[in-house]
Image 1: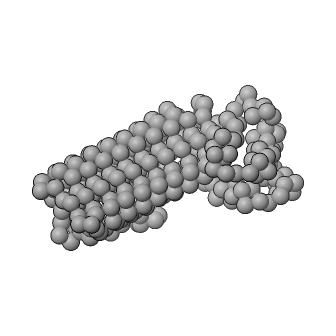
Image 2: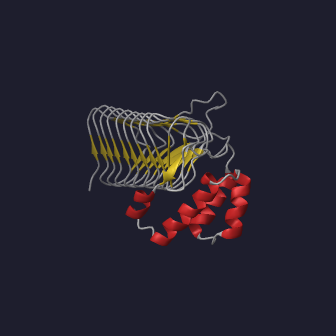
Image 3: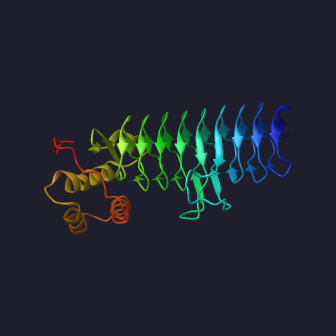
Length: 268
């Protein structure tokens, strides 16, 4: 399938466009760009140097991909912004490439949806099957694991990690890490409950869900601190892959994890 480039688009001849790529009216594609087969670039889009875009992506009107980091230490080092296959970037998203301070890249995985006005800052790494709602703003060095959902108008502090299969409610500020498999919300943002519906929809067994429920009862609903809770989990629970994931997540946390809401009960 041939490429389809609108006559008003400005595409540098050095850009690498695969078969079936569409470039909309008045869009700009710079030289150090790779775009995979079947990807559609809408009108008035900027694809800047360092963009590495996968197959069958859709990038909507006014989006800006792989522009320079908003970081005063950045000195035009060659860095990238990577987008996986089948990912949709909606209107007016702004995606900044990485810096030498961490990854030399920023990245969004495959099968993701970034809704309108999302900002992904330098050195952010977003996994696969992630949904980020409108106007989410993330600072640099944020990590979001697979299958997470971030509600609209959320502000995420730099170096925050958000765990797999978690849900973050809308209109909150996230200054600490959100562990995997849970729902987080309230002000300040706290553990609300296990993301049971999401886990069921993704095929987690009843036994696995029950195990995670027990884990978070120990971690959040006992009177133990995080260190004591982790030790009790290690001593009393089977170390399934999901339990290990949570324990590894906590061990790697630099900002600390969110706390439990004061009204949490054992039935949550």
